[in-house]
Length: 294
Image 1 (cartoon, rainbow, N blue to C red):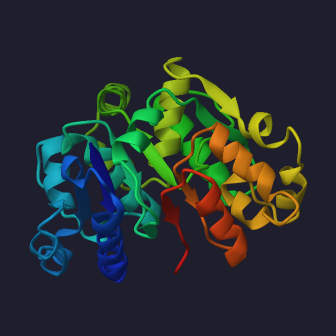
Image 2 (cartoon, one colour):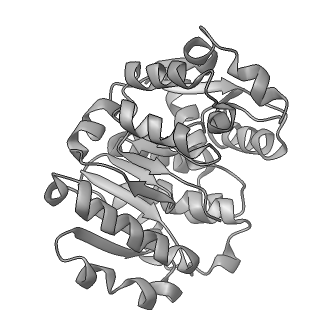
C-alpha cells in the first residue's frame, strides 16, 4: 500500500507532524510506504526524514527522476519551468504511478492521523467506490481545469470531480491514461502538461468517464436527500468540496450519517467549530483529518 505526498519546503513541518501521527496511530504502518515527491533543489531538506522515522517506510523522490523515468530524457524540475503551481503539483501526483508498486492514495501535506486505525481498511474500500462529482460551477479556475482536461483527452465533460481531500489512483489505469495522452498528442508528458492549468484527478476521472471504466454518482444524490447543503454553499459560490463550511448543529448528525454510510475515513476538518469536528471524529470511522493551515 502506498501514500504519495507532493510537498515543498514550506510544508516540511506539516510532513513531520503527519509522520508523527501516522507512527502513533496507524496499526499496520509496516505495510505502508509513504512517498514524498519534492523538487531536487529541496532534497537536502527532506532526505533526513528516512532516518528520523526508522519505524516507518519513508521514501523521498526527486521530481526530475520521475520526469526522466516517464519521458526518457532529462528535465529540470525547478518550479520556474512550470506555468503554475497547479501544473507542478498535478504532475507530481499523476506521475507517482511510476514509482509505486501498488495503487496509491495521494494526500496533501495538511493531514493528521486522529485515532488508531488500519490503513488497509481505508485502502480496501476505495477500489469499489463510485466516482463522486458535482455539476460544473462558475468558479473561474474550475472552468479552466475542466476545459483543459477535456482538450487533453478529446472529450466533452462538465462534471467536477475534485471534491474530496484525498485522491485514489489505480496504478494500471494511470498508466493507460499516460499512454493515451502520448498517443493523442505525440508528445512527451512533461512538455505536454507543464504549461497547462490542470488537476490530475480531474484528468484521471475524465479519462475513466470517457472510457466507461468507473461508475459515477452526483453529490446531490448523496447530500441532498434530507438537508439542503447546496443552498448554503451557493451563497459563497462554492461546491461540495467546501461542505465543511456548511456544517452546524442542525445538520451535523445527517452529515455523520452520510460519512458512515459511505464509509469515509479521510475528510476535511477545517473551517468548522471544534465541537463539530470532535463529533465527527468520535461518531465516524474518520481516522485522518485534512486541515487548512496556510
